[in-house]
Amino acid sequence: MTKQLDLWRSEFGSEYSKRNNNRITDEDSQRLIRDWGKILGHAVTPKPKSILEVGCNIGRNLVALRHFTDDLHAVEPNPAACQAVRDNPELKDVAIKEGDGFSLPYDDEEIDLVFTSGVLIHVAPDDLGGMVDEIFRVARHYIVCIEYFSHEPEEVKYRDMEGYLFKRDFGRFYIERHPGLRVLDYGFLWQPLDSSDDSNWWLFAKR
Image (cartoon, one colour):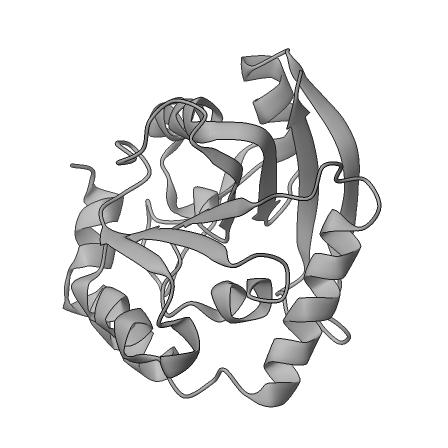
């Protein structure tokens, strides 16, 4: 257990989920579908039959990803967020499990595509390798990383708290830790037009 996981499992994480629970609008979903169309695009062959989100919160990405596969999985540390996914009729077929990215309840290479969106930024630098290794272990074909970017690792205050938000070049971190990964594509989601808060994304293939 890390102090970052403690925060997201606590009432702080539950309140975050409650604030966002009414924000999956039709417009939001359409923007997310467009985002994922950019990310997956023509670079993904074969098309992923199964997708796992590590740290799904209330499932905004999962609502959009229903248009790309019927076999959706999610792991989320906050109980209230897990319940929000279970209570959403649009996500009734999602296999969601309460847990975290340090110990994913899946076999090696069990899921075609594994991704995070705004999750690795909340993992302390000393712990980041462990979560990236788990994602690599479970992914069969593809890994997607959608996170804030910085050329050099830096910590940023998160809601006036220290030790809870870290920026870096996550794409570089992945390929340096797992040199066998191949970069299929990468890009930027600009907040005025896309659903993300100005995030970079990387699409990797396992060789």
